[in-house]
Length: 386
Image 1 (cartoon, rainbow, N blue to C red):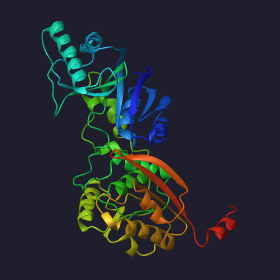
Image 2: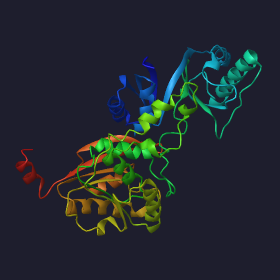
Image 3: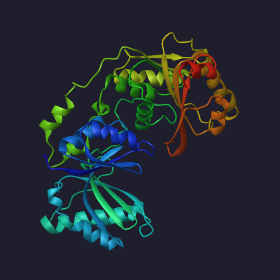
Image 4: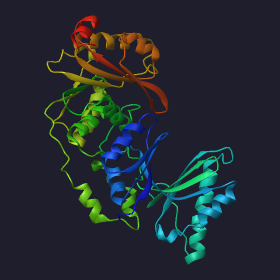
């Protein structure tokens, strides 16, 4: 149980550093950042915690074989060498997902077939029985990653991607991914120390993730299951202990505000917030950002405005309004905005303190931080020795 095991945590580009910190916090060791992934060592307990607690992980993989292959037969032969009866039962169904970055292997579906054939043939020759394939509801998930000639075959301990938290019962068009939303909040440094506002909240994902961070509630508690629960070596007692440990939860003495100009969006957000159990902490309202009264308490802002694909010629007005509203109503606070629209950012008319490159649904975006201050910049710098 205490032997160190190699794992790979997958994430979105730009969130590798945040995920590395999360893994460090749960006791992972030898942490190494890669592109869209973080490698680490740990125990079975570390793997359970990573699935339950890491807000910016998409899935946690446990490599079982790494080999070189120059053609499909090499893949077949190497996969067939593995003692598969020690990994899963022939009565269990399985699914293989392949990711291929190679000049030699150009079709992920073909290498998936060869891997599947090797596993099925192994069982057929070993015990005279064949495991079944299931696309919709497999018992065991495998991941095959090919980079040039290097093949890494892993057990996927998560199953459904970890952004599928389980609290979403409805959604607006193109809602922001839960992992990205959590990553944006963690990058900003907000952890519940003041009020929080998302003035263009859509289906409520950013406010819900903010509530979980403020209360330090693990993102995996809403899920029905993880793939590792069907592994042959699953330690139910250990996982129950980890799952039921609420010693890390915190009190949140401020308020989260979620607003949107669309009544349909707020209806969707309300349903998700209620399902997550956060109606006590999140207030919703149908209102334009410009019409929100100036807050009496310091309010931290994170939002994901439309990028321009659907709002056409209103882009100048929208982003101009954001800049004007921030400048006149939110002095002495911080605002973080994600967008792919550079022209829109220019219309905000404020100088960003930070720019972080992120991806939202494969769209290259900038995540910009604006520290708002009262009065003129020169006066502010003089008062703060800046």
